[in-house]
Length: 162
Image 1 (cartoon, rainbow, N blue to C red):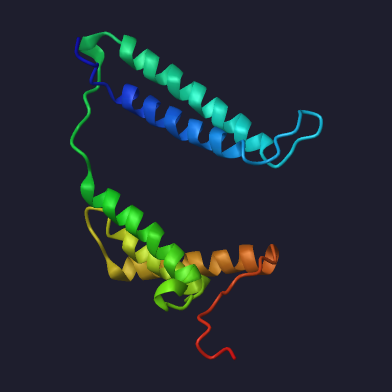
Image 2: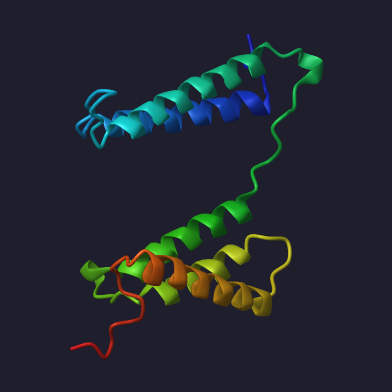
C-alpha cells in the first residue's frame, strides 16, 4: 500500500519530530513537578503537546478522502537556502568563529546580514528595501533588547576595543 501524499501528513510528521526532539532535550534539565517547576518543565510539556498535535494532524491527513488530499509540490530550494543561510550568518556575525579567527561583528551587523540574506529568498529582491527594513529592525531591536531589557551582548564590532 502506498503512503498518502498529503501536505498534512508531512506537516504533522514534522511537528511530531520537532516536538519529540524538544521534549527529549528537555529531559536533560531538572523537570520538577507542576507545583515546583524546574527549567525543563515548560519545554517538556510544550514539546509533548507539539508532538501530540503533530500526530493528530498527520493521522487526520492520512484518513482524508483521496479526492480531497493536497499533494505536496516541489521543494522551494531557493527560499529554504536563503532563510537557513541568513540564520547561520546571523549566528556567525553575532558570535564570530573563534576557531577560524573570525571576530564577532556584533548585534547591529548581524541584523543587517540576516535581513539582506533572508530578503534574497523572495521572488524579487531590492537591496534598498532590505537595508531600510534592516535599519528599522536594528533600531527596534536595540531599543527593545539593549535599552529596555538590558541584555548584555556585543552590539557593535569590537575591532577598536582594547
